[in-house]
Amino acid sequence: MPNPPTPTAAERFASFLLHVILGVAARSGAGLPFPLIGLIGNRLRRIKQSIARLAAKIREGTYAPRRFAPRSKPADPKPRQPSKLPSKFGWLLPLVPDAVAYRSQLEHLFRDPEVMALLAAAPASLGRPIRSLCWMLRVTPPDILAPPPRARLAKAAPPTPAPAAGESRPTPKRKKGPERVRYVFGLRYPSVLPDPK
Image (cartoon, rainbow, N blue to C red; front, side, top):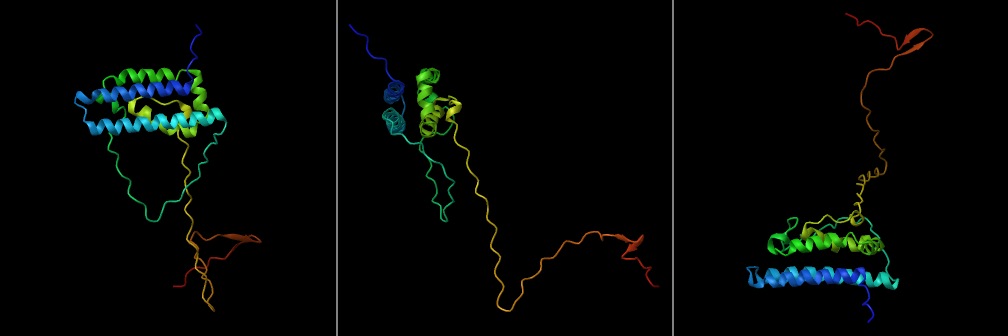
């Protein structure tokens, strides 16, 4: 009987996330509220779908890296809606005791050369969903998934208004400093005369 094919890195990620989703759902009768279970499950499913979609594009050769460009702030920014999920580093661990085992499994995945090759193929796109997963389980993500540095927008100087017709542009004032002294043919210039009394 032939051996079954070895699962790919994307399939191992999908299997891992399925176990986490099932582990969260199993807490329904152990004090974890149903609305919270639904929120956690939705977050994990979105992560699972993102990884599967990107892995398929990489396998088919259709993946194109995203280009990050600095964006100017909107004039009327909308307030960001707060997340209904906890935000503390490793917040899933106290809610789901089995998550400690999932944490070690995720760390084991990051030691797999095939998984690291998948991450290296699309670090910018895979970074966000996997960093979110790492944050849940209190795992330090691989260095390759570090977010790109944010480009700072240089503040443009306000334009100087043009002078009106028949009006000259004002000469900028110079800061007063110590008077420069020169010597011409051995004599101090300008000469210093005693104050008349």
